[in-house]
Length: 113
Image 1 (cartoon, helix red, strand yellow):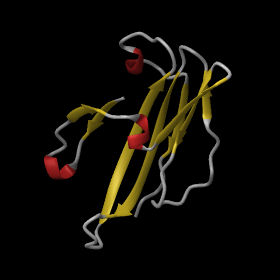
Image 2: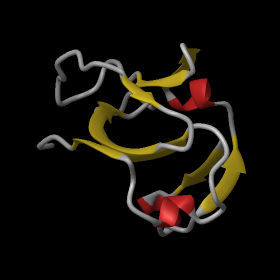
Image 3: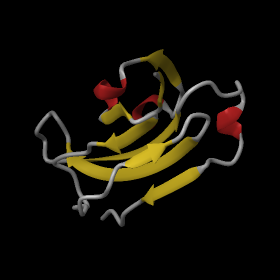
Image 4: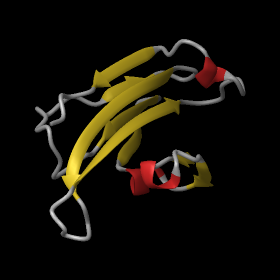
């Protein structure tokens, strides 16, 4: 998985890398010739209702937006706000696929205080 991270502390400079989807909280399973996509965000605000996984046919892709807040890992009580955008394609797609219009968009942007 191609991973791009940006943070306010680093001046929103993009840091590029690769990682496994499970390391970024996304579960991917192939079933019956389709790809089952399910982001797993736990212990974060705002609370979310269980949502169904999305199934993609070969050649399709999804853009899934999620935001949330958690307490900083330093336990100083400060909130950490995060925005995740997952662009996930199933099968062989053109190099510029993610610059186009997705087959499916899931917008789970919640109100953060």
